[in-house]
Length: 123
Image (cartoon, rainbow, N blue to C red; front, side, top):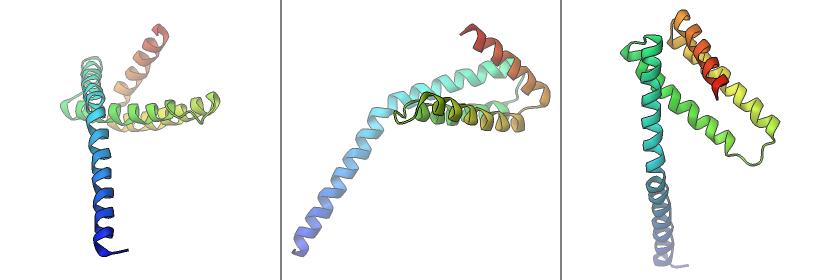
């Protein structure tokens, strides 16, 4: 194969990958924007309920985004059985709670758990 053909193939492959990345970014921009808005609203709701400071609120917003993405990834996995999904979601929740405990005071975290249970029961 000539060098020109190799360069053309590499160029075409690069163009296709760039197109894929751009389309993936473009198509998911709206859902990312919605996730950011929802996370911000939730963080500020918790800010009021738990009397969080500015730094805690920002970190909470990041955690909401991080764990929402992780939970959605598991929920969108079709290869898992229902029991496996529940187990993985519980493991993620445990990790989330560990990070929240480090972020909040003990009193804030206990109130978070209490309010979260009330919200879960209403759903």
